[in-house]
Image (cartoon, rainbow, N blue to C red; front, side):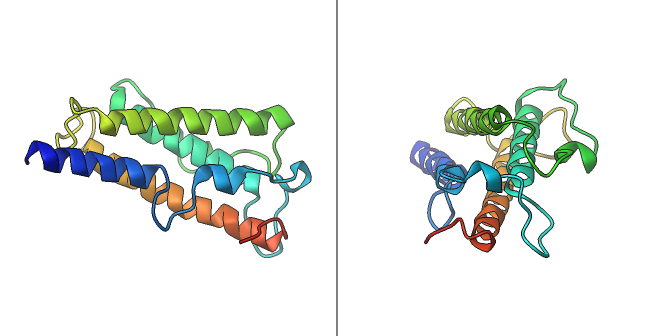
Length: 161
């Protein structure tokens, strides 16, 4: 791969992780959601905005830490990947979850943007995963659940296109 191709790939990965193109951006999805709706579940929908936000945060953290830390232990599936309650325990918990999501998203962006990161090498403690595969998984997972938050907000009357 040429240096130009490598740069182009990293740039496009970062664009995708940050919510580029047709994907909703994290900041747009979580901004201005009234506190009273953060734990609300629309009729016939299994998740509240809080549940989806926390799930996004937990999974992103897990993917990031797996990608860079050989001692990382993933949460137990599936219960370790979802919050225990439909509503955040406090307003501060909502804010903290958003801050942690941003921090981990930036860390993943830094990891894939760093030319010293071999995107194609197998992660030694994995079973075939590469940083490229983990970055694509993260982008795909985030896009899916951010779209769910948009759907929840629409159903709750708190989203305006």
